[in-house]
Amino acid sequence: MMPLAEQDWKRDAADAASRGSASALTAALGPVLGTLPDKQARAVKHQALQVIEAALPDPKRLVRLASGLAQSGDETAQELAVFLLSGHYPAAPDETAEQLRFLADSPHATVRRWTGEACGTLLVKQFHAFYPQLAAWSSSPLPHEITAVAHAVRIAAKTRNPAWNGPLLDLTEQLMSGAPFPAGKAKSPLTLGEGLLASYPQETAERLDVWIASANEAVRSHAANMYASAAAAENWDLLAPGFAKLEQDESAAVRRAAARARKQLMKRVPPEPSGEAL
Image 1 (tube, rainbow, N blue to C red):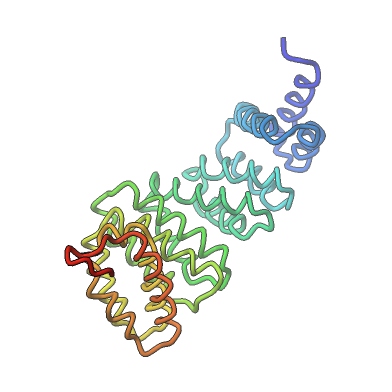
Image 2 (tube, one colour; image 1 turned 90 degrees about the vertical axis):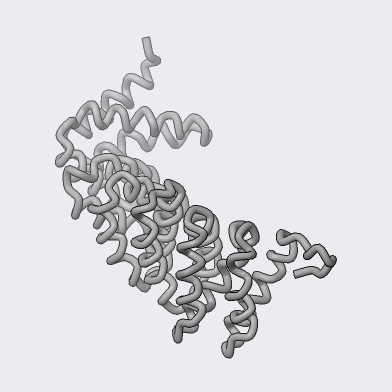
């Protein structure tokens, strides 16, 4: 038999979920989670998701409850919302996408990180339905929304699905076209390097030729940042000609990005047989 306190919170959480009350659900979970260390709190949250889904089997009502949790602003409520929304996307695609976009800009770092991961998982599972919604986010002025799209691209690229390389490269190009911002420096190596370049080296190298020749300085800067990734070093023979152009770019910002990338490349690209370094 489960301890009395566990019976209490599970009963209260189930009752709140069955009524579709986000505020009552948050109130039921708050006291127990506030007394637990992180590892135990994570276990309780996992149990809470199971309790909620069992108490409210109607997917559309579940999405509405998740929307209420998302809008509450409470960190735990938003964490639960991420998983409920991404798990029940087909029941209400537009509402789910709207709430995930809201959560991508959450004030809570954990919620933002999990939202980016959830968007990637959702893109893999519902590529043709979710892709247009992510494409709409890609022109957002909000850095955290852009970062969520970048994470989704990286995760989808890991599947190496040959049908997705073109759409994912198109989506990345939209991300690169905005003005540089703090998230952008990490965005290019993570998305293009660990994701697209590692999974689709030939196709990405061909698109890089286009980006390096772009009139948009931001695109060229992000292209230069990409060379800082481990995947760039692994595909150096394919990418070397383009990098030379970036090092001679007319823009000082692009040349600085290339200089930073060169420092990483020198750690990873072996010297030529003659002994000459990169």
